[in-house]
Image (cartoon, rainbow, N blue to C red):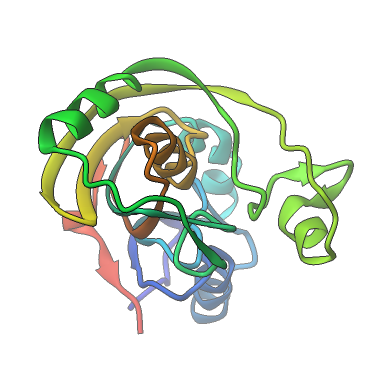
Length: 212
């Protein structure tokens, strides 16, 4: 990839890499010190990462970070995870198999403005320290709730125990938290097995560059 010019770059972040590592790679390849992004992706999430290269663009990071986003994600029913994704410890909750209609009804509960509790294993700072660091140290972390807006949410496919979902959401929405809440509504438990960000504002994953 060629990062010789300051500007805005669309990157397809692979699963397993942190957003920080992508920023560091772009900084190294470009030789430009001022590099940022318009909203982080968890290491286990993949998809569109908007990279801001150069002073004129990094100073607009807040504007780009506030853009709405679209995610396609898969959840597994029947269990919960300490991290709300595949990385955490699992606990079985139920063998119940919700119908497609029941899942669609549960999803409809989340359209509009909702209160959401972010995952404990997240980069949110609690008293100056990242929540995930406190959790790894064995601390009980009380995560503050936040208001987010789910613009639309739909079921793309369902074959128990996996359900595929698409959601258009406001900035600051945690998809892992949404998965957890859906599982609570269905009384089955649920966690994310895959998260793909396909859109940030007007920017599409279809136009993104792959990274080595």
